[in-house]
Each structure stands twice: as structure tokens, then as C-alpha cells.
Length: 428
Image (cartoon, rainbow, N blue to C red; front, side, top):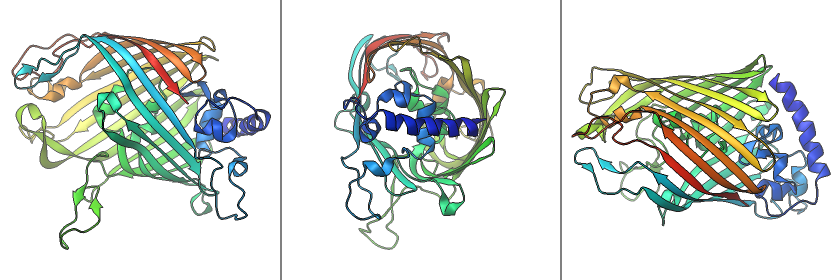
């Protein structure tokens, strides 16, 4: 049972934190804070091992966290001896077939079959225990995907691990709903878990409550449902008021997941009900004024084939009711999912396979950009670890989906999405 494994992992993690006092300083914030090696928490960064999962479940702290705080003679003040910061950086070169198109006019002329994507991102990460039960975590991204001059805060949350002594954990802030299943930030491939992006269950603002009940893990949450980039004036009381609204309606998206083990397989059932704005304009490319209902049911499974080979499967069944303004009486159902295998061949080499699939037949012939939800792609990746925290990446994506007809409207699968990518991924 997972609860038994977590207890044993917690003891092992405490032992590791005691036994490894003099390891490298050139490792990220948690490793520096507790003076341990990256391998305590990572099989192959960023993938977590059992210790790392326990560390996260224990509110991102080790049992000796108090020893990492300044000795100020005040039990009601917890300040780390050094500011806990880490950097993650990526740089790639990519050969690809995809290009930019305009739904109305077709190819814009912005096309590069060979591209230097450097830096792909620079990420600043920080986290620290603030009290016996409360931790704060955040990261910000600089120049993500070539957007120099921009900074975006993605994860940023407070977490209390035992609300009112009930054993219930509460996380308030900005996070990915999909992290309840397979955290995107921990994947070994450059290629994403596309179904999460298409379903709109990545970053949002809200609250998660979770608790383990025997062999069952239960999580319930609510989010605004409009992502992390919108805010609105509050000017009905008068001008120049200081506050802002982060949501434009009172209804929230409600979601939950139940997880348990069945014969060595981790199984989770996910559900979400909420709203999203309708799609309007040419090819449905604009945000409409109507609030429309959305429903998601998800199933996730994971396990191991050997002690160094791990598999995972995700399926999402989506219902978007009255979503298109051009067809307000029509509901749209679509399915998306992925299958992956990670093989940790050695301390130096890892190999990954990821298959992304989505069918959007309900959107076929609607002449909207949502015909482009469809994907059928196989990704093969290899990483060579020069150091524990520095790897070279080689990845190929094979597009198995046929091209759609030209436009206008130019929607759907106008080109194939084969690519070959090489580069570096580092954390320090």
C-alpha cells in the first residue's frame, strides 16, 4: 500500500539526510538547504524517486528542517540560513516541419525548418518551510520560448499540511490542476503531455484539499477556471481603487481525484465540472461572451516493469457544451490521452517513449481551430547526464496524423509536426 511505502520512504529519507552531510554545493535549492545530493530525491532529474515523492508529500521538507534555519532565539521565526534559490535553464536546436499560419489567409511566411531555441527558458525556483505546518513554493520563468523581456510566475502557493489537526492538507495559490495526475514539470521528454493543455487543466488559481484515508488518496479542489493571466478592474465603488479581480464570475471549476493501488498499479480517477468562455469569430479564434459548461472525466494508471523501467497512462474524456457561437445548440465531446515509458538505463543514460493521442471528430468540418485538437504523435527521447544536474537531450517526434486540406479556413493539421531536437537541460 502507498501509505506503508511512504512511511518506509520517510525513514529512509531521514537517514539519508543524516548520512550525507558533505556533498556538492552545485545542486538546486533543496539539496543546498539540506546539504544532500540530488540523487536523494531524483532518479534522473527532474524525475522523482520514492524519496522525492515522500519529500513532496511531507510539505517539501525533511525531518531536520529546523536545523537549516537561523538560530535567532525565537521559536516563532523560521528564516533559512541562506536564501533558497535554484535555477533551471534549457537551450535547444531544433529541426522541424511546423510553421505559423493564419486561419484566414494561411501561411504567414514565419517558417524555420532549423531553429536555435536558446535560451528556451530560464527558471527561478524557491521554497522554504515557514512554520511547523506551512510551506511556500514558487517559480518564475524568464524569456520562456523566446519571449525576452517577459517574466511569468507559474507555480506559486502556500501549503498547510494539517489543517486544524484534521490530517487534511490545504494548498492555496497558483498551480496546475493536472499535477494531481502526472506533473508536467517532472517529465523526462521535451514533448509535453498534450491532453492536459488541450483540456485546459494546466495553470489556474484556487484551492486544493487532500488527505490519505488508509490506502486511498483523496483530493478535492476549486479554481477560478480562467487561467493565470487575467485580472479585472474593481471600479464600481469609484476610481483608482487598489484591488483587482482575478476572476470575472463567481462560479468556480470544481474537481477531484481518488487514487489507490491495485496489484502494484497506481490508479486514479479524476473529475472536473466548470465553465469556459465560448469561442466566436472567424474559425472560432476569438473568446466569446457566453459562459459554457465543460466536464472532464479522467483515468490515470502507472507502475513499473522493472526496478528501472516505469510506465504511465492517462485518458481524458471531455464534454464542451454549447461551446461554439456558430452552433450554440451543439455539444462537443472529444478524447485525449498519452502513454509513456521511462527507462533509467544507467547513471548516465535515460531513454523515454511518449505517445500522444487526441481525437476531435465532433469538431470535424466546423471550420474552427479546434479541429486542431487532434494529435497522433510518437516521441522518442534520450538523455545523457554529464553531471547529476546537467544533461544533454536528443529527441525525435514522429507525426502519425495525415495533413488536412488547405483553406480558408486554414485549420486543423495543415502541416506535419515531425521534429528533431538536441540541447542541454541544467539545474543548479
